[in-house]
Length: 228
Image (cartoon, rainbow, N blue to C red; front, top):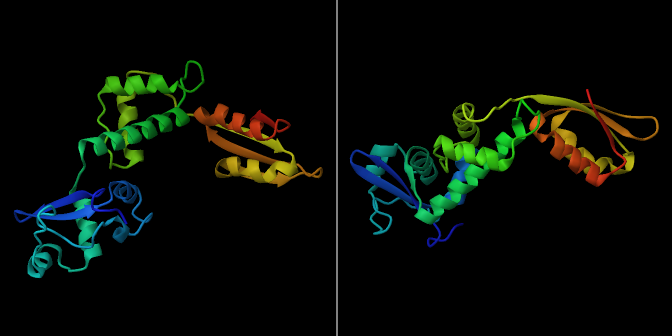
């Protein structure tokens, strides 16, 4: 549970009144990305609702029932955090925006290529284009939605192509455990060969191809691969 010193205020307004909670800014971001990732109660620094969190002014039970139709703190917190605003400090917002910006850039770099060279755009090129596009990163908005919005603005600035590559890998059986972890999420099918080697076919975003090959070969330089 986050301390009150590190917590920020989540604020929701209804019928001209404010309703506030002390919440963990990092866990709020995680929860907004995936509501099932963490229990709503773990976001709260204190399980209480305030009209003014700084002054400690609390609403009556009657007011809470009227606005939220419940007195359960988890249900009230869910609505406040979902529909309200998170009051970040300037430093907290800057830190979270930069982290989300890096995630957006990395996602585009891994999933898109330059159709002229068939290679990923360098991180810096995407970063500069995103800055030029004036895209405003939201620290709490879902990553996949922001990636789609950013791509729409980036396409007039840099050539982007979203392609996949199919590849076959042949891995010595002794290194199956460590390398299969790298390939598992992209795997279409696999089989064990008579000599004890493990073979698989994968489909992967073309922007991730070079990085994945490098990781596999670093774990076993005798691994074999080819494009399909």
